[in-house]
Image 1 (spheres, rainbow, N blue to C red):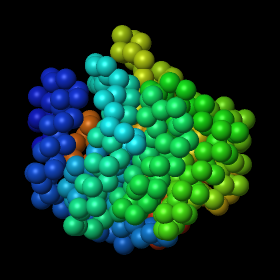
Image 2: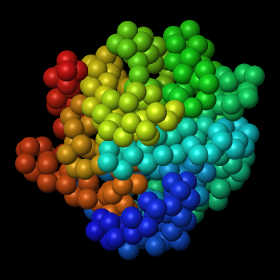
Image 3: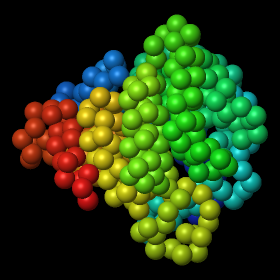
Length: 354
């Protein structure tokens, strides 16, 4: 990460979207492919019917259009999640719409599902020639008259090229989208999504991504609905509309979803609660504020079978996955675990009560 520290001030002097585009282009060219990739067999996970070389993935939002999946995997990630992808191309919300909170190592975004659209992203993923596990995060167009149909269409479109699919109803940047987390709407949505998946002829694992701003009653209702539906897991959590822990008041006033360090405690507590509610019957992917081996292990201990990060990569650079994976091996040694799977949920009960 030291090399990135040298160029970070130059990148951070740029508009955040332009800086992101430059970094993604640099990664796509293989600029960072020389970084050694840890290969600790103790970090391997067999979940969702898939063999993950390690539990650390790249969250949706970094590579929205699947332009650099192989290069991103070469950084050491065990998997990469593309998207969010909508049926039709979408420009997203007006700029500026992405804000770095340097002191807090956080980001506020109100991008609004900007992406190239399902057909173009599908063609790109279908042309992939290198291996590695890829998920596709699916959303609905902002102006859609039938969002549930949009999600079903996305599932149908990507079932053949994705190793897993994510139903994203938790972004705060599309008006009314989070209403689909309410029980009646969610039952209908998940039924449509699983039917579309089954009709596609391939049982691609299906996950639901939820918001961190749910109260305990709403979380329990979602857990019950997910357990009754034919889905495989949940991603915990998306960005928050809250501003707890933010120390930059001017930027905190910007509307949008907050990610990074200030989200860590909230999302980790929710992860532990969901682990208790689902009793290990769903695969849980922990995300929100992971930027070190300690924060990654804390998610595992709270109940995460897999992990995802994004904001940490912005602040720490392309060496972060390697640093986290090496550090996790050391934590396993310190804690006396023979594998990362043994550690899953080891502190969930305590954390669920905090």
